[in-house]
Image 1 (spheres, helix red, strand yellow):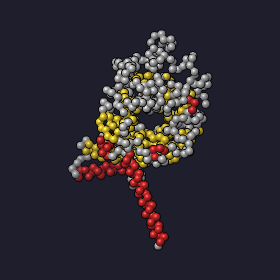
Image 2 (cartoon, one colour; image 1 turned 60 degrees about the horizontal axis):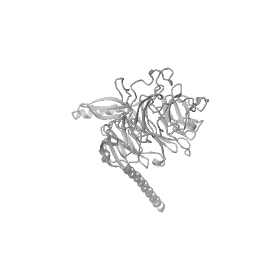
Image 3 (cartoon, one colour; image 1 turned 30 degrees about the horizontal axis):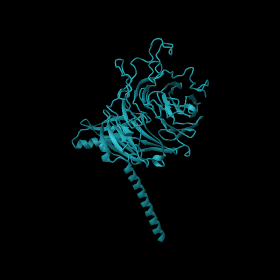
Image 4 (cartoon, one colour; image 1 turned 180 degrees about the vertical axis):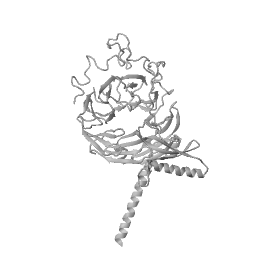
Length: 526
């Protein structure tokens, strides 16, 4: 009897401890996320809140990325009446056993809803629709990888790979693989299940996370080296190239072009080809050092900023060209952010500029002051955290504040230039997904690149921030007379009298320049 009473007391104490722990986690999430009233003031609504399975909370996070998989779209059945969508039933909704209901069950449920509406006197119809699948991948410092549905927060899989004692570098993701570096190992996982596909030992120490470039995965390594493997044959010999200088930040790849770009300590920005014949594509000298990861858009466009206050729009097509150049006048160390066709640049003095990604023109009448961090954006508004710990919603068109309130609880956010969802992070490892009030389905933010026509005369570069700068309307590769640096008569897009970087030096080297590939050695040798 006494033993039974003792066990009963122990059970009660354990239950109280569990309840207290759950309450503490919920309280922490509540303190560090936006309340429904705060979200509504920003024109948002909380879609879901979840706790990551990463040990150590935010301090244990190595990387977090949003990925849009257009190859496996979500199927949704919509019930419509009077040109309004009354109900959406996704085919991947889970049943009581945790399995997706499927499209046939979704249509059955839609027919049942139509029958109920008809009995109330409302005529409704049903139709199928498809939207890209949004997934959220999280990597812990101990090698734990978690995949979630970006729209519902549902965990798809969680796996631990690699040695937790070794550093894990940021992930490379496509529709088939999740790839990251753990110590000296390249670890390849199946994107849908998290199971290990392949593990390969690097030849040189990786210094940045891998990047998927076309049909290859490439990694920046020590001593300026780049190592690559074909995605279809991880057992193949490494492709190797050499750049001048160590990378100053990680590389980025174009979403629709097999090109990757990254800056180095030598003051160059390199581009590498990742198609069937991988190799160095081109490089150019920037006016100053690029210390933050560039932004990338459709059409092979890359956007980067330097510590001399210069912002560049660069096309990675063919041998590369400078689309435009803009000077903000102050050093830039924060990453550039692209939402739609608007590029956002923050200086070391916390001034935020908004530029047209096509022409480089300044779109706001004046920069927004006291900006600490860009948290996310939609097609109409930008959400930022100020240096005074206030959350602000800015109008994309003018930069004026649409809403503003204290937000000391907001810790960080997952960068998301792909959709109109905002993913806030808490110090305890929680994730809060916010969406616009009227956007039940995600809106894709990447816009197709539409180059300027010959009749559009872009502005000339100016020294003042208010003066946008774009390249000459003439083709930089078109004939331009007898140029001693271009024997065939073509104008050099990076050098010569019209050098957009302010110097006439040949970016590909000359007689007095050290060989970027380390002397006479073949940069592509195994």
